[in-house]
Length: 400
Image 1 (cartoon, rainbow, N blue to C red):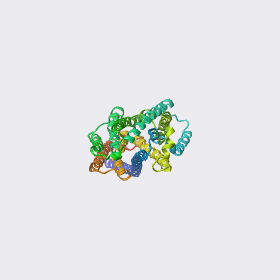
Image 2 (tube, helix red, strand yellow):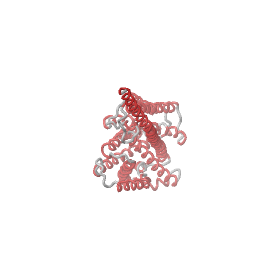
Image 3 (tube, rainbow, N blue to C red):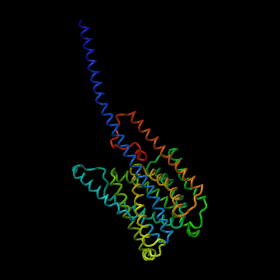
Image 4 (cartoon, helix red, strand yellow):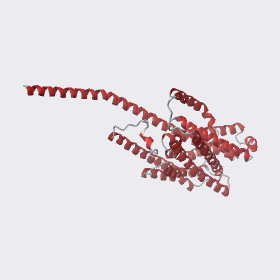
């Protein structure tokens, strides 16, 4: 009887333990569902931000390039003015910038006793903004040379080389891993625009002499290489110096470097003497004074739209991804040039667009593989949590 009583007691203990286990699992199930729902919303918001930034890059780049070319085609001659409008539109960002700045100050007041040990010094931030701003001003001037002396198709072809330069600099500066899919993407995106060099351009596309054509080619190639370097340096600055994960950091990067670059180009505009000819240039503009002002104004706005998208993609993803989106948009410009500048559409341009799409898909497939690997690692090690709350895609070039 004693043994039977002991067995019954053990069975009752086991039953109680089973009930407790089932109860805990039952209570944890809603928590798991809620956590999964929160993660899905975070990923959806992340992908939405990526899509918005990419759209800003494509729309801003296409509009700014066409408007910049229109300025020269219709009688504009000042390379410094064409450079200034690429940079001087940043004041339109001030209302939103002050809004998010005031929001951050309020947060700081609430958490006034918390000191961020990773906050960069004012001197280091100033050095980053000034150095990148000076470099950006020089690159914009070189791009103006190319846009003046080269046909739109040739200009976009040379600009596509910036993706290769960006990958090269990203390998050394940002620990970029050149996987087969990435290399395939780089090759396809470069070839897609390089094919345009084999098409015949009509003589009406540009009136530049052969010497000026060569100068424009060299300037655009140098600017493309420099632009790839600037993107990689910007990503490195976010990682090593800025160390901030707020959109305000993106706005700071855009506004302060644009301020420096604008000041430099304004000095060049006055020092070169081109300022004195702007009034005459506006009066002789083929489309009239009003169109002259509107062209320059919307060119400036379009470049700022492009800058927001470009820096946003660098911040959220990587410099190479930002450049890949930019290069994907390059074949769009020759297509639009058919409508606005009566450029001829050749089969090579169609092939170029197909290769560009293929290259972009190859790049995105690599990001899908990276995300799948991260998700698999999370399932294998469930105790490891992502404290930053970032999407797995954000590991792309932050491995460093």
